Image (cartoon, rainbow over all chains, first blue to last red; front, side, top):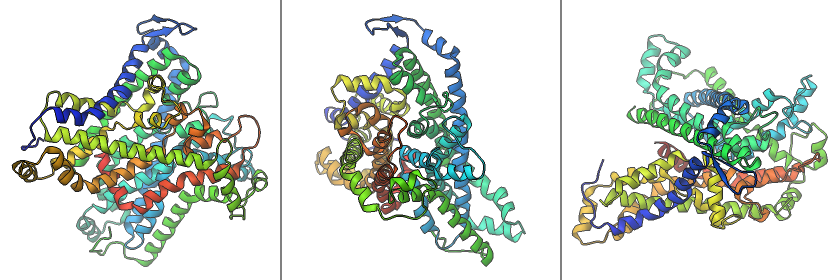
Length: 293
Length: 285
């Protein structure tokens, strides 16, 4: 879409767009270019010179069992976070949708966790499951279950998943609730007159009508799990034990900053760039559909 | 959002009560971590390190919060709160200003490179800071912006989302207004200030809410570039309060800090709920 009426001149618009373009160039494109460039080199141990290795960094990465494991970890983590945040959210939204009065109050309360930063959410959940003082781990201990996410990889994964999904429930709830509210009443009533009970109506009519929202949330939540959960992992597990919670973004950080392995970290950045690109395309496809709906 | 016409579906008393009960249970489960953090911020360290900790608040609220705010562990939490506030407002206001200007240029002018710049802005969507950590750090270090507010703010203020949102909105402003302004001989910037900005008020407010939360909740970036505790933001500073060795963390202070870290964004979200929901939906479109 284009405006029919525009103003003349080219100097003014260039000045107007300049701040954004300059910031994008300096802090987005130049660093991204650097990442691509550096991914082709290996610096010597003293950082004095760089040796060109072509796609060597990538070959090395893809044969590295820790990096491949990190891919699997990220996939498992994203799927679990997405499910753990969408299913409770849908359940709560269906409940809120059934209420005539009071849904506003519940909505106000349910928004809270969205405002809590992932890193703070991490600290809250770490506190509950702390191996020495955590309330939940203590009660689990009383029941005979020895909780220790510091040593047990599955428990660590479970904890970072729940802590990451928690704040996301608010977000998903808002979107599901809005979608449910826009399902035409008349359709549901017609089905009710035909004798369809609640679950029948839900799976037969309501769910198909809100699938565009569900797909949209699916993509958005995967993006969230990939890129915005760093704070949760850094506060709770630090990627451990034995890298069982090291997702790709965390690995770029730990190899690049902690391990100072620049070539490998840059190559990982480039791979992530490709992943973001694909996810963005996917997001646009689904958002497009949602708008038409 | 109440429906005006509530039909024959779902009116039964028992079902309604069950719904309320389930809903309240859901809210309680969701709130439990926050409640526990609050309780922990009102009791003594001894209450906590001898589990199970109490479930109801104690009488140490004032002492714990005073301790956190004015002494903290590495640095007073008051300082971190101020840093977070400057960063969050800087990012929100900065993003809004540069996005308003660039969207105005893209919509209301035809100039050389317009399409190129448009795509360039679009592509920044695909470059979140998480994937270009090391090189961006090097750029900021090169400018000497480590441990500074500009280092915290500038790398995060170019936003394609805000630009597209404003572009979308500007396209709905009737052409007659721009036409009239041109006939009256008004300069473009006059039109921008007198017509475009006032008309965008609601969008600006909704976006501010979303961007404030975004800026406040940043973790990775402040973690990388603020090595000086005086420059820590509260969200990243909490983790720094944990001892590195085997010592007990001082939980009452840490939990008081966590509560303090969530108060400003919660206030913003809850008090501006309508704008927030609107901003959320708009910015995802």
